[in-house]
Image (tube, rainbow, N blue to C red; front, side):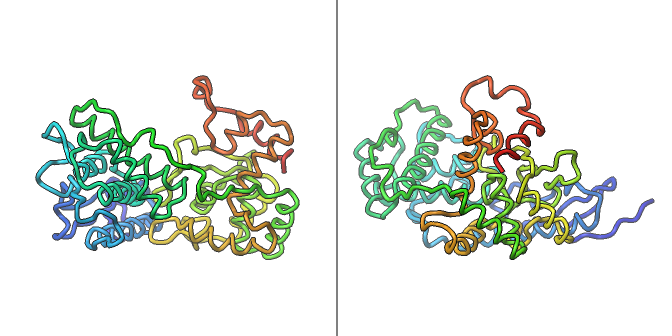
Length: 388
């Protein structure tokens, strides 16, 4: 019988490591089982240790948030989350209508399974704004006048038009989902509410080719992990969070066509389902990937600095890199400008739009584009080398 090295919070079954952790007694009412257990999908003790510690850290963080009161959450005193009460289980609403505070619980209890904390906080905060402005009413009782009052309250809070769009979108989703769950067919009063969507919104500026070349040269001079991240984004057009959350195994440098695999990880979700893709590594992105492989030997992450406690901290990366870029670019330029510039660079070499969409992970309109596997790496690489 084979002997296996131990890993924290785990046991071995048929050679595969499994994570196991008991739920604290004071939090049992949040769970349907007294312990959490799942496969770590590895036979390696070192990999199991890394994954188990990350899972344990994420659980500790989640349990911490469950135990404290979120003082910044609007409408907290009225927000009765259904999944945390015995009055109405989230998976089986019994009344033919519900209050908005209970609708949030239904929404999170069903759609929030496996979603990150940001998803839950967005629903609670957005609907909390409604509770503060209009009170906790039966969802059939909200009117267009309430929606307008809600809009005015957001404007008074100083929210930009883009932020208001996100808040309204979340409220509409909660309202529609809860209505469907309890069998109501009613109009959504939070739809078609007018406000200036461009208010307070600064246009994101693509980086000029000259600025990109200057930054890439500086990256090669400094040659550290921060500059590898900049260089990787500069010649792939990846979102910063996508690049910061890469694992070492995502960098396929020994493949016939070197490329990066952009896929979801437990520590970093992708923005959309269509964001999963493979992008050829060319130019400075290829140089950065090689430097990462040569220098990052331990662990699972390509950028350990921005992946701690089982979560990618893209906001920290954005703040640090935007600050570093300032002397070399215009005031409005940011790391996200590389993504805008990549689209312009591909346009400049007359790259077909659907290839541009595949490289950047943008959705291409039309039913036919959802069929097949997309363009092969050889085709993508040809256009990216031309643009680079």
